[in-house]
Length: 200
Length: 407
Image (spheres, each protein chain N blue to C red):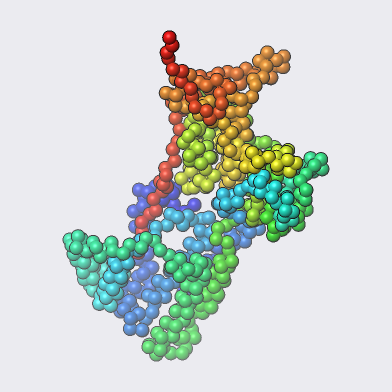
């Protein structure tokens, strides 16, 4: 093998890996965190419950956080949490908001609907942000149960918890289904009452 | 993408055919490199020829660099690459026997066949000795077994044992290889008393060495996993789908499927295992968000043409699952808007709308919900469970078995 062949082989080997890397970098560096890592981070971060939010607000500790309101501008103007910055969900990727989001502080997201807050959380984690939390519920419930009047019973409110005892309504076990289905006003979670036959 | 055979891209029955082709290629390269000569092979122990070290080190470093970059670029699934398990005692004993046999016979198992093919009698004798060894080992396996399977260490990686990153280890190995090449060449020239003019006329390895160092240097700064690839859905498209509601399937559609015992959508329960076992919708399969990218579900997402609908108690876990699946490039995925809570509230808790309303749409919705409520309260879902058994059950472990191989 002469010098030219050796160098050509080495350049081809180098090019086979470097060119796709450059191509990849130029075309699809849309995300800064891999899909797998986002799922892992989601399970590690999660929510800020109403009790924690209340503590943060009472101790004036919210300055250490970026409170992000991802509702549309016009709804934000009607009312928002104290110190919240408005970046609508549809504008999360826009350049004008990059400076706002470029913070070393943890980000706390809220919206009108909890699912949109979670979607924004996943999106931001994918963009390489760390420490992104969600306040459960929509703005109205946050306002009602955590800001205006803290309701301890709602301290751990979360729309993604089971609100009903599902099997009581929708029988899946054929044996169970043959028994009388509960009335629509049955108390969720209560035991079935079996009438005892008898009498005088 | 690769490896092809374990992923089913090439029929496993062709495994031996490809092994034959690769074996012929391997043998040809060995013969061309002069490995059919036992003098050349034994030269590494006497210091007059280090070509064995250079060839195998080059092969190792080239394969390592290729695998690292191909894995990063998503061209090969490293999880499917077979790694020979480490049995410490047998590895040590085998190393000693092989080294001793190498000095004594002048061949290693592969090169002995290359030598025999071109008619070398010493290589043929070596092969006879090798088969004799295999026969003795097989015959007295029970006696050898404690040694053979002793001190099993699993599949340890050197970089893990050393407590450094894979990239740093690869970089250092490349540097060690290049230093070893230069050093052994120096020893070889000194032992052989090579003429200075011959040394000057050798092809320069400066450019290949520099390119290899550059590659490994770049690899040092690459993230462990590639953040995104071309197959993924761009973030703007994800936002658009959520904003336009195209990501969602209404609870009514799911109720309609359950009530009519349809199998048109695959319902995917994203809640934890305990919640799934306590209750799930008829026919639903269990797949928490962390499992969506698992290899065992890939074929399901890619090949099952039915819409897949994620659901959870509310919408959070289903939203995470949907975003993960949609971003991964899986088509036809949706999430049930509002989840089980919204579905049950509408079906069983909320007051039924007026079934005699003048507005046709309101009236239809009201009748649909009334019928559905009666259907489920009377145990219709139980029948639906019997007929609509989970349509697919993913294996707990990957069905893909790494191909066993090695030199």
